[in-house]
Image 1 (spheres, rainbow, N blue to C red):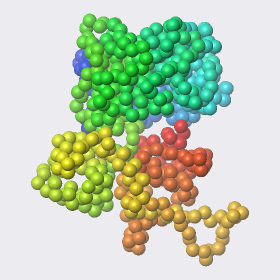
Image 2 (tube, rainbow, N blue to C red; image 1 turned 180 degrees about the vertical axis):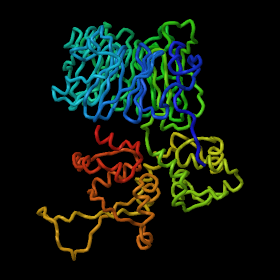
Image 3 (cartoon, rainbow, N blue to C red; image 1 turned 30 degrees about the horizontal axis):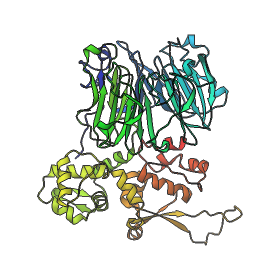
Image 4 (cartoon, one colour; image 1 turned 90 degrees about the horizontal axis):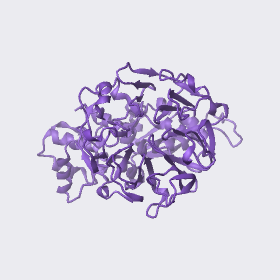
Length: 587
């Protein structure tokens, strides 16, 4: 039953770039596998600057720089874990989880490289930016515009460097800034783009501001001048700022995505074929019947991904030779084979090239349940052809009794049953027709946006009545004065954390080992003892994480204690090696 997915990374763009990544010519909307990438199955993030240099962050914490017709250059940062990479027109910035910034680049006409001795910078050397370390600043996020850099530090403090004219670094900056300079505080998010002349930021009280060279009103500002030297509040008459999921800004247009999947655009149509023509953010009517989950905006084209795994794009990739490319002024569906895993696809646009890829560090829920299906362990129900499964999971995903499901599949082929179960376990629609037929037999309209594994696991987590297992956590042996109780005659006291057995088995190697070795008495009681030494509060957060892929602290949680107790959880509980748990604790 084990399947292989040939899709790793596709590339589309100009012939200039194909000498680096692909064998044959590729233009929008035509795509080719990125066959010359060294590690297409370990891409964590991929970006491209204006000179068509591609920087890849790999899953083994390495950086690969691809330059036309030259050997790939590789970089590592000792004793650091890379969190994010960003690019502007001519350079790259790298952020590590320790809050440090690193620079890679050599062109510095507009002071884009934030180093005092920038003249020593080359594309062969990844250099630490000492400014933030010397100022004892912890950088949480980096955002790059067109020859501008924005550094969001802990506490909501924003610094910037680079091209300071036209208001592109805020009202206090009128000249180019080599080293970062303080811009403002009480900022929670910043938006820009590698080809953007404006930047936007969301304040702690959920107000959206914008500044910079607003030449085509891509910042959706009602102002008389294009040089917005002092940031102005952006009015969104039909959008709540608290609902903003993402904003990406090109040179002459912007896209805004809300949490409910609605897509809005602002700016004007230009020679590059991006048809917006709206002075304020207005919903993209051609996509209003789709729930958008990811967007990517470049100089002159866009890519968007829907919750049903459909990919749309418009504009074109090469602004220098428009006569050689077809211009798609309105969103068009892009068909690429093997794009089944909607939880794991990422998209990226640059000036003359685009990428679609399966990132290495995606949600581990679908990956864990895929392996769970393949292992065929701890099953309690059987389909025709001896195909085994887990009753509660199948019933949860379909909202109906197991006997109804088994009856429907009595006369179906082995391939149809396996296709159905692959959807049940990890959301991949290998055979959409069999899923539709199954729900039609129950007079149910199948909506793939609603019937997702993660939605169903969250629903299951909140259903206390269906939980069929208890994790027994040993209570603290300290007395009220902080002294350990030495009375060996005292019976051990445990607190209960209810859960679903199949979730623990799918997500944690430790729990699988526990279930394989428990005694018969514990099996009958449907419970297991946990001697990890973690507090019940931290274990409750961990169990919810297994359902939701999120660590959600409450006012009652001590974040320092939680971080300390769960720091070793990936190894101790034998979670997926790609687990996002540590990332969330560090963010």
